[in-house]
Length: 353
Image 1 (tube, rainbow, N blue to C red):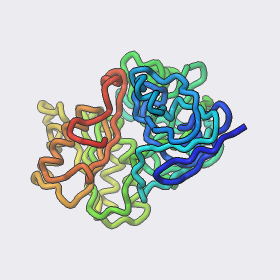
Image 2 (image 1 turned 90 degrees about the vertical axis):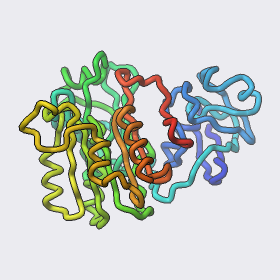
Image 3 (image 1 turned 120 degrees about the vertical axis):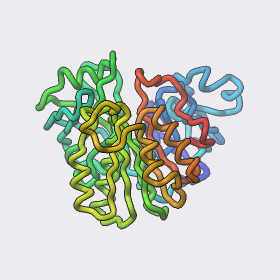
């Protein structure tokens, strides 16, 4: 048995199988609904039921209060339809979203690369190609480990049959520790994807700024490779932040792209290089490198930020002081237990993010 769920204000209709949540069905049919945690605790996926009935599932009483339940609100990640439904979601239609449906894939580990002392490159050969937009992510399932972990795709969509992940070792992290210490070439894993709303808005004009920190380089790498492959003629500047030279990975790749493409500029920045006399590049935080490069004026450009929360917040402040606004800035925060994963993913500087 299945039920039809119509989503307002877009008017899209999805078919939800018995026992499936509204969010699961939407993502697997290429329909995007806002969500974050995916298990009923953050309230990002809260929707209004206009018609029909649903089982509320395991929605947290903090994310969905009693008064909201009485008003007909549900969490899309938990709600299981019990009839045909009409719901209303807070959706901003994005002309650049391609709506690739989420699918399940089997994969074999084809290569493991030590990118830095704390970041490992993981290459997975898929059982079939994955259609995705540069900047999106997948959920990885390791054998014998409960739940999944999200990792951004570092390869461009043109390399769709083998995905590349940049995995930072998290202190005490079971999954990242296992990937770094136990995963071997030839091991079999499962994953689903693509997920996410972090991608280049190609319909919007303006030169492009990318600011990346740590393993947050993965999404910008995918985006930049995709843009250059497509022949995009806008000026593209990548600011890559790391603590020291050992942690500054893929430098050779971006230096080669800078030589090959006149519209691409690469600016690495090291935040703990005061005593490194051999380092002739920028010494300081990555957002300060961007500020120096553009002399504090960012207007008419679009910025894409990816990295730990502290870096993101500092970069937002810098960009807004330089005359960029909310509509000009897009981001992907890399949260882990070490970064305070329980914190809100909203920035105090932004109303909608």
